Length: 298
Image (cartoon, rainbow, N blue to C red; front, side, top):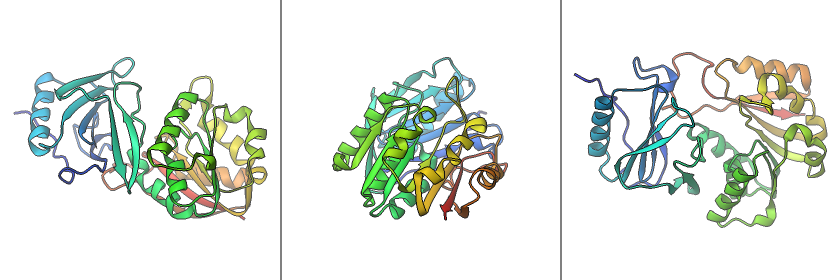
């Protein structure tokens, strides 16, 4: 008998994206290598190690029955070189638009390793939306500018998106257009953050900063080494009483890393709160998943 996943089910015909099952948190014995996302109308299975074809087929059958309004079931093999996608059932869909908190985002399937929206940041984007009114916002490591979309929707006066990958910033521009935002309020800088501090400073000072760096990118980012280079420049970038949302994705670094970093590099910052991932992103061990802390620069 093949053991199958007991996954949650989205609201019927909902355009709202969500994670259905989070095995990567090691909270479900035997399924540490499996995640399932609802990116309507696509169900995306992500595998971090190989599985038996018969097990995968039974999972597809179970998903197609429980979510009959899905039009495509796909798998991404993160365990394979270049993380290829495969259509397992239904239509060939490489692009879809999903909804989150009334905002729309483009999703690309089979084009790059990541689809364009990190679902564990749901509450982070919600927080930015709530805090952004009339603020000048700095979005570092902007990726497809989802935080920027939330900020402009929340009434931000300006947003600067910075990422060294110009192609993802182009996707961010399309996300703003998708939501009919005024692009005169949004700037995009496709530069190396660590070599462009003077350019970042030029558009400040900022009322709100989001910093969501990758843990490691060969030749550009080692966050354990490099995060401090950003934090020590906060006095140059930020207004008094400004807010900072600092993100940490490394499973090897916990919240204490950010607290110690702030104490050492910018002691004029006060810890305010933690923003937790949605409940579905259950972690068996504290500190292994996404960490998002809010500070205030005094």
